[in-house]
Length: 378
Image (cartoon, rainbow, N blue to C red; front, side, top):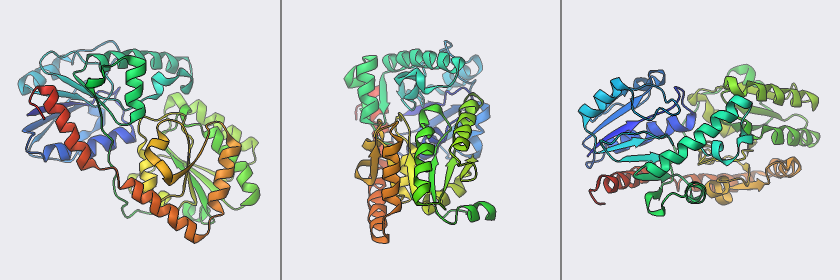
């Protein structure tokens, strides 16, 4: 079976999407059910620098995704036609019109069609509406749809009316804890008295205001503790970051919050492994690789009860209601007050939960979807 993989983004790529591609492609290529793979991405991906090479894999360039332009660009279409795929796998919820093979799509981003209030600015709200419309086309016209969580599956059924038999629930996998490079001496020293950590792309739906307000209360009991916030800021969410920095200043936290921005993967593990508590304040997630990374590193966690975080973290986290900063503060204080024995039990629960998510299983189940879509059986 020949699979064409299309990474149809606007030119950028999130950490979660990148992790998915880097982990799933080698496992697809390792299967004797897959003959060849053509993987197409915008040139800005620099895919050749991070997608693992395989004799079965050929990389190609396609134009970035543009709303209301559903056909493959003319140059890539020549390549795609010559490849003659049995299945076209679109790794984002993007609509593509290609009659040469059945389309399989996967949903990675729930924020645009849960509520436009999760965005920042009029332009972003308009883009969210466009994404919602395009997602509806993508999931209804595809031959098969992969949902990474039950929350996404139910949303596809309830919000978009997708036929139940077209949807397959496939959890993503986890990457085992690896040795991590420590940060610079200055940052390491600043965090030496303990710190609360959170990570993820800097978006309005992350709900960082909860964390800052809660942190101000936590500081009354733990005056030396710091907070570290990691995540790339897009130009469209720069205003939100400035708003959060102003909130921190108004709460007297200006010297206690480290805005780390992008953290290289080889350093990120250090923050997970050394934090006193890990907090997730998102209003919505489709899967949340950050949650799984925190679990894999044994973090003592607290999260909102927003979809789909309890589905991923189960009993390996405390929970609070999004927007309830006091509830978050109480949870953080509970974690910080734990003795070594309690922290170790939480660590073991977290790592045990992470181990339940397997990339090998995800790849096998994804291949089954391809076979069914191609009419080859299971």
